[in-house]
Length: 150
Image (cartoon, rainbow, N blue to C red; front, side, top):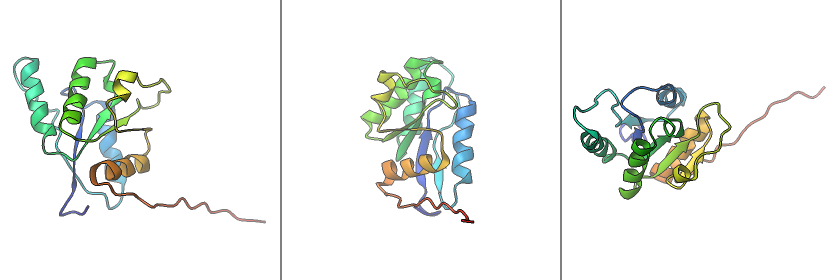
């Protein structure tokens, strides 16, 4: 992964920029040396019925290497979120599912079954999961804890 070869991502959406949708990009932008290209376009809602929306999602998901699923969208529209994740799965696109931000509620089994990896909201966990799922890169980062002994 480099600037010349960014990871291509799709973030699930319901044709609007939700707080969690925007938060994903805040996390990705704050990560150093992580390059990505966003294929999701929530601002380009197609005119027409649900089938037109599904076709636009297919176009947005087709070129990506990984899909980031937002579990927080599930209560808003189970069928539309499920469609995006099912299409990703059918297209052999790995799905990294983010738990609802700030919530301890368990992820519904129907949603968890569509994910390759489920993570909490953590910048490092998100970037590492994307690298693992999209490029099969295992990060060998170490946590360093500094303390003084008196």
